[in-house]
Image (cartoon, rainbow, N blue to C red):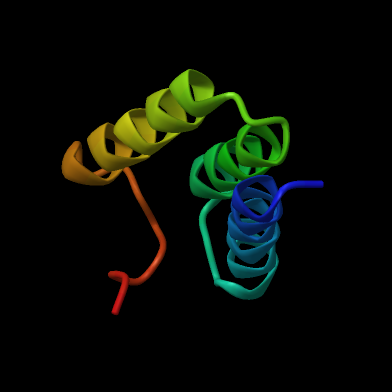
Length: 69
């Protein structure tokens, strides 16, 4: 595995760890896990979509999770 590819794989693993540790509402949890899976699969478009949907969800005032620090 190339160094660049290893580094991107670690980024996917890092977002998965954050998804499992953070207290999130159910939609936040699903979107964060989907982003981690997309990163692990090197699907940058899907990962971006997940981040956009997560930001929209939080901006709509539907999120029951505490504000990210």
